Structure formats: C-alpha cells, structure tokens
Length: 220
Image 1 (tube, rainbow, N blue to C red):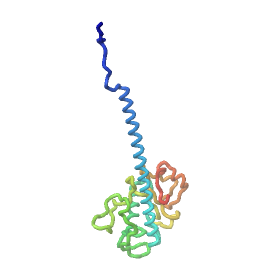
Image 2: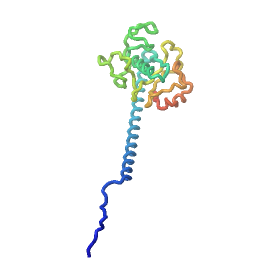
Image 3: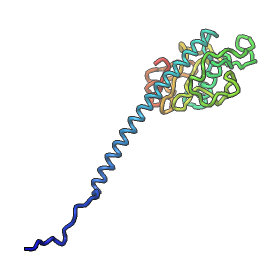
Image 4: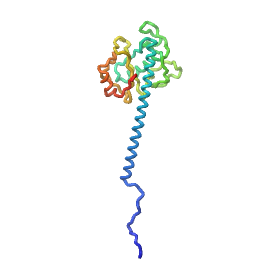
C-alpha cells in the first residue's frame, strides 16, 4: 500500500508575521521611551543639584563681599523677562565679585559714590568652580571679564541677580538681594514682583507663575 503525500502541503514558515513585527516594534518603542525618560530625569536632577551648589557658592561670595565692603553689589534689572538685562546683570555681579567693579557700579579708575577713586579690589570667589558663559581671559586669572562672560546655570542661562539701583539705592525695600536660576525652561515671569524695589505683591504667586514654577532659588 503506497503512502500518498498531499501535493499542496507546506513547510512551517520561519519568518515573523506582520502583527508579530508590529508587537516587537511597539515593545522596543516603549522600552526606549522608558529609558529616555529615566535618563532625562537623572540629567534634570543632576542639573538642579549643580544649580543649587553654584547658587550657594555665589551667595557665600556675596556675604564675604558685604562683610568686606559694607553692602552687596548694586545691580538692578528692569524686567526679569528680558534676557539681555539678565545677562548684563549677571556679568555685572561677576565683575564686582572679582574686584573689577565697585559695589555701586564704579569702574576701575572712576570715582565711587563716596568720592573715592576705585582701584582693582581683591576677588571674593574662585571663578573656576562656577559655570561661565565663555572662557575666562587666558592672559591672566585676574583679568577683567568681557561683557560676554557671566554666571551661567546648567541649562545655559544667566543666573538672575537683582539688588539696588545705582541711581536710587535708597528705594530698595527688600531685605537682601534676589538670586535664582530660571530652571530648565529658561523663563522668568515678572508677575507679582517689582524689580525696582525688590518687593513682591505675593511671593507665593510669583514662584507659582507659569514661567517661575521650575525656578531654583538661592538658599532653598
């Protein structure tokens, strides 16, 4: 008795079906999204920690400066939403703390608010321990920084520093200065803040404004 093999029999296929391939791609996409989310979260936490350390270093330098010269640097911003003004203020703060500018904004060789000729003062901080927007002048660690050099946070934005106005220091009402990083979004919202005298209409509302929700403040 002969065995007959069906003519239309087929061998099991070794390839993936379209549905199986789609499932594989979906799993890969999910794993990639999870990995990216974790990496981004770790990077954000690292940057926030770095910003807090740098803000603490700047705050310490400011206290040393006040103990030595009697006041914090007078550097005011008309609008914290203006990036150029924030950068200029951060530069002015840096220039003052390293001794190339008097607390009232007087430049080396000029006459300060007390009638004295201002000479280069001693630096109160080590700039190598902080992030700057550009390389420090290679000619000398004591060289005067150019306008394009300022304190920069881990997200590439200038730290916000506000204190007395040079032309009217007596109008400042806040006890102490204002210093913070604008966080990952690089934004600052001026609602509820009067930059001219440092007062808050409502400090809680200021910090919870859409542009300030991710800000990192010195001492917090």
